[in-house]
Image 1: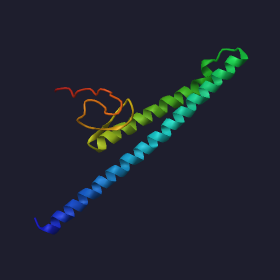
Image 2: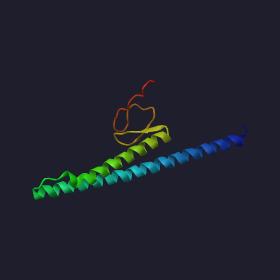
Image 3: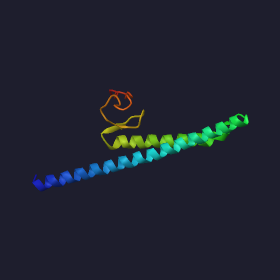
Image 4: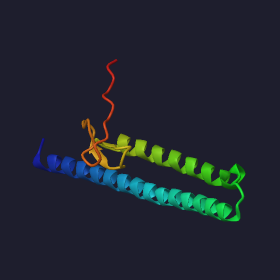
Length: 121
């Protein structure tokens, strides 16, 4: 293999890694936005509870059902993005703190979350 062939292969590999990094960062940015939306839904539910308590009336489940379904949908989307991130690289995402951790790690260095050991076939 000539020098130029090796150089070309290296450039191609670097390009592929850059694409992967861009995709991972895009998914992380999406997750950040989804988490912000979840926080807004929680705030809305808290406001409903506060106002109902001030009025002395119990908060009915149908009043916040839309918020709950939106939160559950957003959490499912975040989980799907985390799975995509894991599939793209040699990292896994900690479910405790959402940080990137090397695929072979047994504990998260940020929060201490324990990862399940891969099961033997």
